[in-house]
Amino acid sequence: MPYSIRSVAVRDGSSRAPDGAAVERRDYGAATILPGLVDAHTHLVAPGDGTLGDDIAKEDDDILLLQAARNARTLLHSGVTTLRENGAKGRVAFSLREGVRRQLAPGPRMVICGRPIAMTGGHMGYFGSEADGEQAVRAEVRKLLKEGADYIKIVASGGSTRTSDPNRASYTVAELVAMTDEAHRHGTLTAAHCTSADSVQNCLDAGVDIGLDAVHDILRDPDHFGLPPGGHIGARLVLEEPAKRERELLLACKRIRSALHRRLSTVGDRIQQHAVEVDVRLIDRDGRELEIDRSILQSD
Image (cartoon, rainbow, N blue to C red; front, side, top):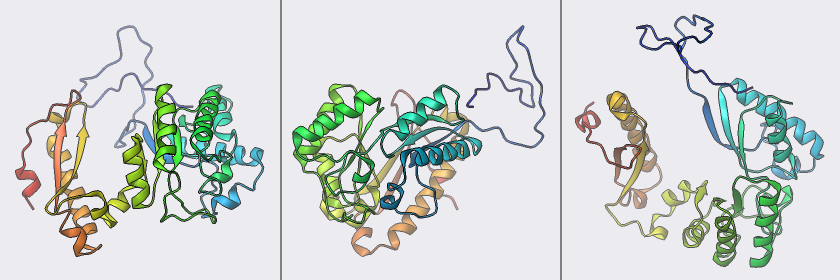
């Protein structure tokens, strides 16, 4: 089960257990102790062998629950202590989260949407929450929140589902607004699967909080989003104590920037003239931008 380490004695002895606390000493040698990892996009009912969701959904829910429990255990043992589950069939995700909470099965902490909301015949509709029209999708949000969803996942475009088209938007802006508004009324965020330019734009217009699988569309079709020539792609890193590891962080940012430039160079001149710069900034927890040594970014 997930657990926390309250104190770790480092080699220079600068950290120690609280006075009077029982101490169990373990020497891990040259090993590295890491904080728990976070997997932000899982589908625990999937066997991980490339089986399409259409076929996964044909399985009985009890078999899928066993599959999900196995995957959750594997994730935990690989160092993942928190995961965001992005869609399962029926009540499988709800049952697994409760089972982990009761310590009936080992697994990470789970942030779940339950079932994605999809149009009739749309991507992942086979998981059990198909709905069409503003009133119906709003009612589906209420149902998922009643069941215990931590956030609402909306399928705003097609995907790998055989009856859907990943290059086309599914829900209208009005339907997206209805779902987002209902979720926000209950203090809950929305996330949308969107693999087409139109679906990304619809989600932006509707005020959807989180876009999933959307970056490829911005790179593929920058004109659609009004990115001006000479514009830049920016990313913010929000850090607890960035000053202590500035050099290492900036070197990591440099590698990311180089990789993104290589990616841009492979997708055509039209992309390159739009996304010609990748900005790097360090932001503290209060939103203040920190001064950084930009020579590190420019050095070889």
